[in-house]
Length: 467
Image (cartoon, rainbow, N blue to C red; front, top):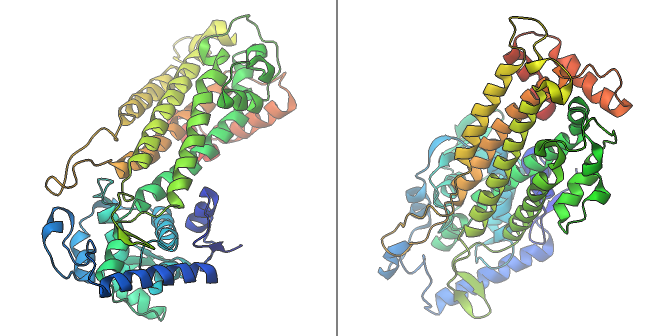
């Protein structure tokens, strides 16, 4: 696999390649020089006696305290995460993004810091990072501190399939723990890299899920005997990009049985078009964040400059917008499932009950409805949930990490709803007169559901299509 280069420009695809598929990471010569120049600017400012936040001062509200901080103390005291262990791919994505942001030449860290982050990736040493603890401003302090512990040889990591002390993994790989000065330590934790990583991985999954749904959709449209005319690309004359892209992806051309289908059938481009557009915007936000310094201070030709680049408001609002769009998709899926149970829509018995005494597929809809209700609660915005921290200094926080994490929770529920949707769609058609590409979709689902008559097992079997 082609290596991913730090310090130039990374895409969301690059993040997935490294986080999920283990693409190697390299530091080009030009990037190394940028890191060295920024580090020299930091040392020069320090020698001149310039006040530097986090180096000659305390942190947060304690900025008024003049001091000489210790790098290791900064890392250890900020490692206050709780909850389940973050998935490996999230941590690897965060390692990559933090290394890349530090390599842009604004952070003032010594080159060894970026080199060690790259080594952890290339040697598949993944720090153990508790999932909760960040308020999404002043950076993702807690989760990034748990990552930074590994550079000190502290904390635990996943290595060769086991959770081991970080020091042990470094020793076995011939790596020496780093001595971090306060600038190195603060630069490692004072950024949005973890929130950005979590949202990046979520966006990749949603894009894949939407593509799969649009490829599957012709079977559903066949089952409900949809009128294709409202779905044609040339019918979408409104000036919305996503609406047109959704219509172009729907490969269905059957006249159907009605002039006007229910909205959940006729208005698919209009309902899912905004999701497409929100995904596009969220990807742009994430890629802008990945390729920007995420530090305070930054080092320029004028020396250290105070900033708020550690603030996660962009990530939080992108995640909130995506959560709303996904809740609307869930609403659409629930309504589509309900339409499948109507005799006048499918031409099949009510609720697909084939004999007296049976409720058919009625209860599949109940389960879907319960999942949609949960998604609606998860769509509550995080970006407005401001809780000030560090006295009156850090008084506007974004809650970006919580906003990003909840997208993964929604994705899991969406997969269950899509699986129910697939089972009920299968049951609503025998596909005798299907077009070839629709017959292939039907056969794939049929092969999975025919192995069991218990509804929950059928749902689980079909989830293989969506996971």
